[in-house]
Image 1 (cartoon, rainbow, N blue to C red):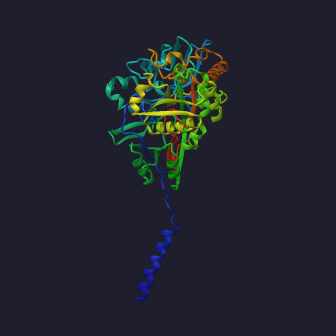
Image 2: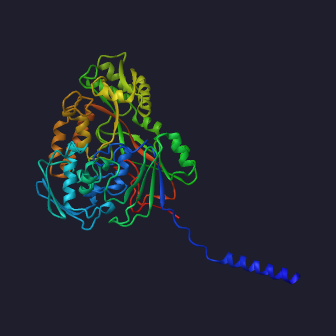
Image 3: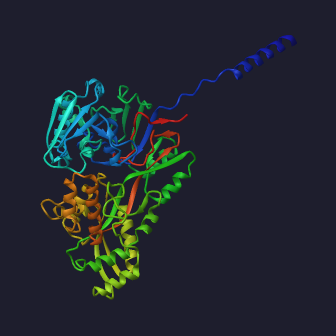
Length: 521
């Protein structure tokens, strides 16, 4: 009996020892990614109509373009090959020829991407009935397929950034001619591109599901599946992230959110361009702001650094010029006036207002704008300027400011990072609100028209930048608007999630997922 027990004990010990010293199978790295988005649903995945932040984020995973921004960058100087492997331009910059990469395949068996698809896509981009970005392509005179792998684009006039127009952003994305014509209206929720990921299914109001494009020309993606959950409620999104239900989530440009999020072990936060530049636009035609001294007094009264610090230095910084700092040709020597309430009071007295002035401003009830407006109100009060805020629901406010109903307009925006876009829309006389050609020139500024127009057609890149910088100095010198803050977007992620590049910018306004995105072991 005793011998039997010893034998069994010995056998068990031998088995346990064998298990203990047996090689442990390597744990496979995670390949399925779940994101929590600050969105309620898909809007439109036709890239030429994708306008919301969420839609722009998704189309950048699905589609490619002739050229692309380097992953993680919004710098136009980083633009390099995508579908096009090479290109050249005529001496006058009006004719551009692109040689396409052979063998690139559309999703779902739609065949090879050819010059005919490129012609179709760019003709669609410049057609106002089929694109929300047609105005950007007004200078395109003709797009031709020279052969199946060669495209020639002819412009009627020079544009500030040809490669920018043709990059992986807005109207630059390429669509499959065959798929678009076959799928018709359903293309907007069932699109076909040649990017690293493709749509698998969409559950309205719940999630959009993507799978890897295993035939992607840059290589098979390391992720196999992506679930993009719609979590428009901030608290729900944060709870899902903290519970590990999502691997990354859209964040808030708020110091308290940042502190709360970074307190969680294994968490990283990414802030990235394009930064939204908030400016206080001043109608230079309305008294008392038709007096430069009064506008200068406003500028001296404002402290952009204080606003940036309040919002959080991790993602906010003081504005320095009439365009965001990630723009080509930005200058921080535009002449923005420093915070000096005493100087502001002296200028008001010199202008005939020794007791200060009282002004009213329509104020959006959007929380981010509302907070800045309240800080401005406090800062101006120190300089003897009483700012009466008239709160208005955001959508109504957008309509009212375009009807020129407020002499002061606090507005934040990000644009394509070539100054022509921002300068034209906010400071060219054609864009003055109320005109048939109106955009967002709330200040009625027209002092830099010559420089803006000259830069648009300048062939020499250094001279072009000089025109843009001169425009910035002129606009700031005349105090058409006061730069306040630049605020970058922000996402939280688990540290094991690696984007595959240094994430400093995203023209898609959200995380760019590529074939290199992966989970570390």
